[in-house]
Length: 145
Image (cartoon, rainbow, N blue to C red; front, side, top):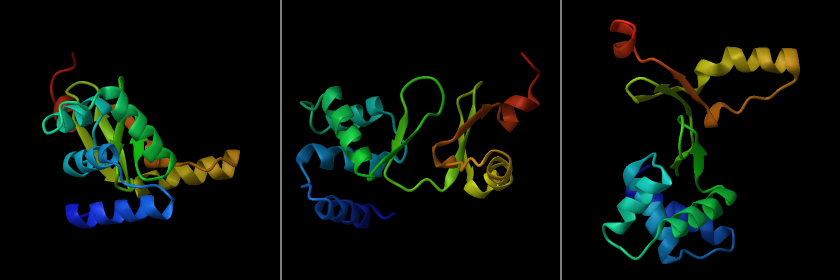
């Protein structure tokens, strides 16, 4: 999503839900548009570069509100804080537990598993919040530790 177009679309989304674009919401959305995926701490650091008075509590409250409105989504990429994004997640995250690399692969990679879960258990998988942990190609190629 182009940054200017993304900002306009997010502003419109808030207005359609009866919310106004406060400076705090704008700071958080701008940070997410600039960073892509980011933890609340990364967002706070990014915002504080231009607005040092914004604190982590404000970031968390704003993310919670924006997520409840469907404007942002989160994914747990491992231990620690979730990673937030304004973009629709049309991918699954592959997280290397050795080097920390995160790779995004198409959501369709989960189609077979989703079909098995649906047929066997009646369970509808939402893989858009999914992160799979393992070892990346480079770490797997090295000697086991």
